[in-house]
Image 1 (cartoon, rainbow, N blue to C red):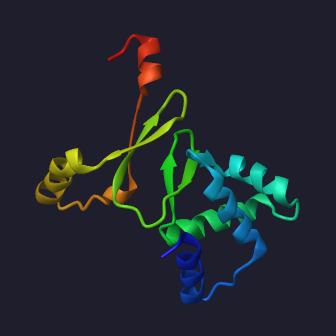
Image 2 (cartoon, rainbow, N blue to C red):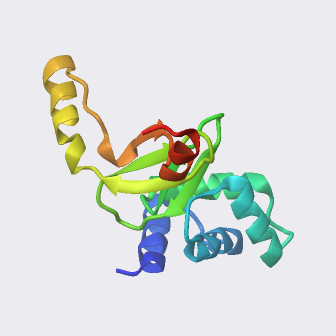
Length: 146
């Protein structure tokens, strides 16, 4: 099922209306190659129509997250970055705390941690919302870190 069809179906199921503003946010998300902040998305939506305000962008991003069409990663300092994911498999978000880069990584190596948290602490990790902060390759190299 195409992203737009899935989106329209979820809107109907939840009793939401399809609006041009929501459609514009989704359209901008389709054009992104990487994670972007709500403000960056807002700037691109503004290029399409000045009738969309930042609160509409935030509400639409929250809605798209609820529909599991958009992934969000906490980039630190209270700033989230968003990317259109569609119905995606669980994966890790590796977030550079220096430059803010977000990299998707395979979750499989984290299976032992997920199992340990459940067995030892009774804590159920939601791997589709798992982010780990650190330094990306470029920032680590610039620091001489490994």
